[in-house]
Amino acid sequence: MHLKTDFDVIIIGGSYAGLSAAMSLGRAKWKVAIIDSGKPCNAQTPHSHNFLTQDGATPTAIGAVAREQVLSYPTVEWIEDVAVNASGENHNFTVQTGSGKHFATKKILFATGIKDLLPATPGLAACWGISVIHCPFCHGYEYSDQKTGILVNGETTLDFARLIRNWTSDLTIFTNGAADFDINTKTQLEQMGVSLNEQPVERIVHENGYLTHIAFQDGSTAALKALYHRPPFEQHCKLPETLGVQLTAQGHIALDPAQKTNVPGIYAAGDNTSPARSVANAVAAGSFAGARLSHELISEQYS
Image (cartoon, rainbow, N blue to C red):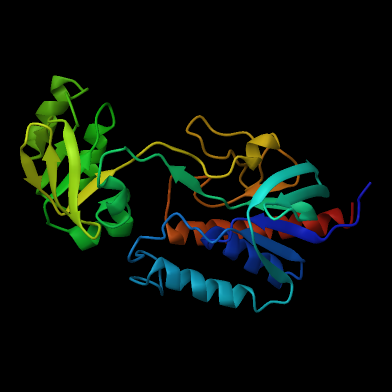
């Protein structure tokens, strides 16, 4: 039995993927709500790159324009709140917010992103997204040919070094303790002209988020302009798992080619589904997920 619903789709997460999905759905004349707390993960990133028409704009500016355009559609509603609970099944979902409100919806789309589990190293969090970065395609050009480091250890070291070496020849691997890889990796790093520093890191020294140097526990320092790091992560929102949504071995939401999860009626898009983290990818994924959701809603009217 299909119950009366407040919305056709509730999108949990109102950053780039969520807004993009809302535009697709809103333009298809579905009644959509976006629930968002207003705390994007890239809030302190100064500029966004590698996104056509918006290269170099601030994430805040991109988000503001996107929100204005999406909310110009009367079919889309913005709810500034936090989704704290969700229950039900396809066509009969209920989403509860932190303010105590309950909303009924036919479908749910999670665009909730991920939470980076940054090392406790003093200074690193203040630089995250500014000069301590994860993606060379987003930020590498701005640090081209400058003194660059990679905070990494283990089996991914060589591949990471080969990637970043494309942007700079002044590259050092910082293992933050004894290197946990074999002599063959060390030899290949040396042949590439990549330095290796195994000193335990004490802190990241910076000025307003911009790196000046790394300080080590033995009192030595290393001047640096950019430091790449890929921290572990967890899902920013636990609600998909409480609804039975499966995750991949890497911790992302598992999807089929139509952006559908294993739970009927639940879709996802954005950083919570893919290691390819960028504004451009989030917008593309959200747009596609919105279109696929629309197709499903239409087809169900005739089934």
